[in-house]
Amino acid sequence: MEYDAFLSFHGVEFGLTEGTNGLLVVKTGSGGTIYGHENKYLTLAARIAERHNVSVIVSDNPLELAPEENMSITMSVAADYIASRNVGSSVFYFGVSKGGQYGAMYGYRYPFVQKWLLLNLPVMINWHKSRAGLMKMSEEQEVTMLFGERDPSYPYAALIDLLRRENIRRVTLPDVGHTFSHEVDEFLRLTERFLFDEE
Image (cartoon, rainbow, N blue to C red; front, side, top):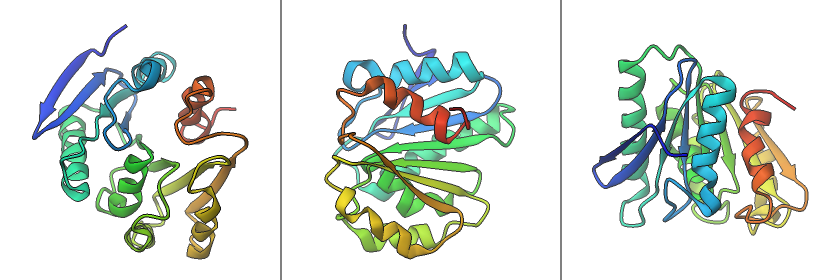
C-alpha cells in the first residue's frame, strides 16, 4: 500500500490518494509525517478513498515553519487540487493535535471547507488565537472538536462551550489518549463517524 502521488511544496510534504467524490485534507500533528504511527495516515487515506471514493491529501507538519505559513501552504495545495479536479462541494478537513489547532486558528480563511474535524488540539497553548479563529468561522462551516479523556488538553476542553456557536460542537472520546497509539482502529473510524456521518 502506498499513496498514489507525492508532492513537496515550500518545505511541506504531501501524500495523495485519488477519488472522485470530494476531498479530505488531513493535517498531522507537530513534526508529524504523512505516514504517522503504524502508517495510520496512509491507512486512513486508503480507507476513505476505497469506501467513499473521496480524494485524500495528507500534509506533514514541519517544525521549522510558522503555523500560519504552514497552514497556508497546505490549504493552497488543497485549493489548487480542487481547482484542477471536479471534486464538487464536499471538502473536509481533519486536523490532529497542532494540525487541529491550525484549523481552529485559520479555518475561517478557507470557506471552501464544509466540515472541520479537530482532534486533541492543545487548547492550553495560544487559546486566544484559537478562540478568535473559531469565532470567525461562518455558520455554514461545521466544526467538531474531539478530545480524548486522557489527552492533556481535556481539562481545558470546556472552554469550547463558552463560544456558544451553534456550528461548533465538542465531543469527548472516553478512555482515549493524545496519540491514539493503542486505539488505531478507533482513530481510523473518526472521519467516518464525524465527517461522513457513519456509525
